[in-house]
Length: 69
Image (cartoon, rainbow, N blue to C red; front, side, top):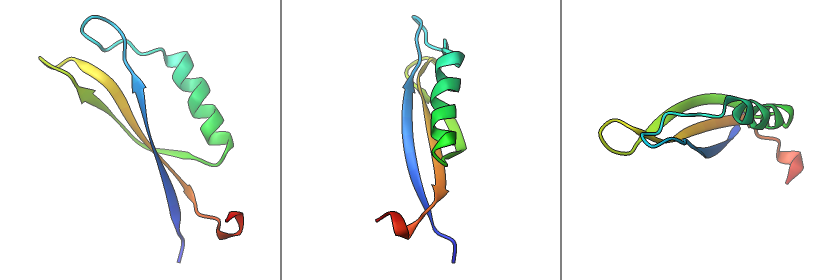
């Protein structure tokens, strides 16, 4: 059976009411993770108040390799 490992990361959102994301920074970080075998599974905003976004919570997965233990 295929096994996976997961990584959950939180990325801060800027701006007085949130919602501003540095897409170039995210792209760079996602590319580093992708080069290490991580695949983005989900990314969702974390609410602060009055509908503003505090952060993005992203979940990545990759195949578990028992030989790396």
